[in-house]
Image (cartoon, rainbow, N blue to C red; front, side, top):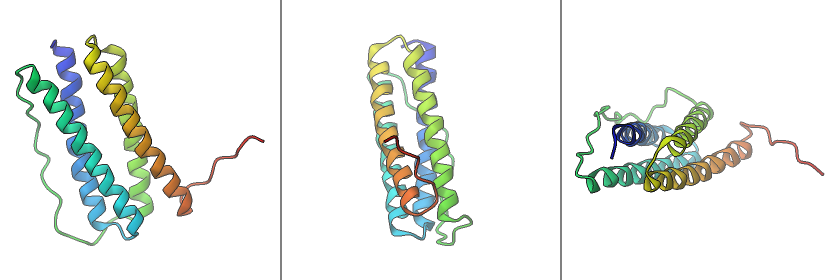
Length: 147
């Protein structure tokens, strides 16, 4: 594994570590049941991606260390509305999709390209569910259809 590919995986792991903690915190304070479940699903997705990225490093005898970002508090009082947390999550999903596209474009190893593509599919599917949920809740307009 070269240093660039190590950087790709480390960046992916850092982002998903933050995402997992953030989705845990959001799921803990969300008011709407569906929103709470959606954030919980995001936490599980981040955990899955983190584990798979760590495994790729371990397979190359590289220690998958990441910086601890701390833990969410036990508070059930949200400083944000469900709508704002969903929108913030939407932005993070789009940043993640961009990072995965970058990783796919510049990685030389086919296994990293494949993982980036699979992660992109999973993240895009999760993002699509979030868009549908935001439309259902009236927090996002439904895009116009052709025909």
